[in-house]
Amino acid sequence: MQTNQARFEVATDGRGTTNITRRVQDAVRGSGIRTGLCHVFVQHTSASLMLCENADPTVRRDLEAFLARLVPDGDPLFHHTAEGPDDMPSHVRAILTNMDLTLPVSDGRCALGTWQGVFLYEHRTDRQRREVVVTVQGDG
Image 1 (cartoon, rainbow, N blue to C red):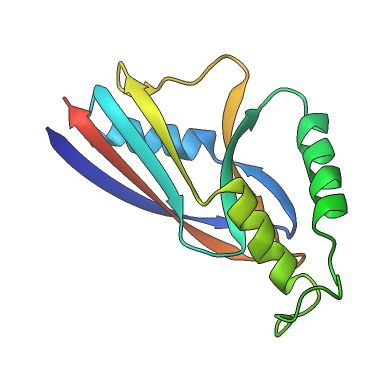
Image 2 (image 1 turned 60 degrees about the vertical axis):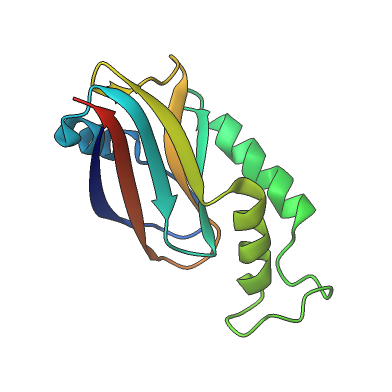
């Protein structure tokens, strides 16, 4: 079994999703691993990763509308507001949506479904720079 690890940075425009599928697929291809698992991890507590519909952007807008209702910025419930009214809501959103994904690797690429894409989901309202680690394990 082989293991390969790659890292890349994602610049976000603030709250919302960024499609990182191509960058993850590039990391898998560069690993030389043909069959195995790809683990994707974002090194932050106020951003997350998700496997989501990649054709219709209204799916991601609807998800954002749902999370805005579920975890609103400035909710008086939260005491952790050191970085502003979106501080604690961003942490809750990241925990609910996960900071990592594990994907199967087949024929040297992530075996995603037709309408699936890998997205970094930024939960802070301001622009951020996020670090993503891709670890691929398997056979060449």
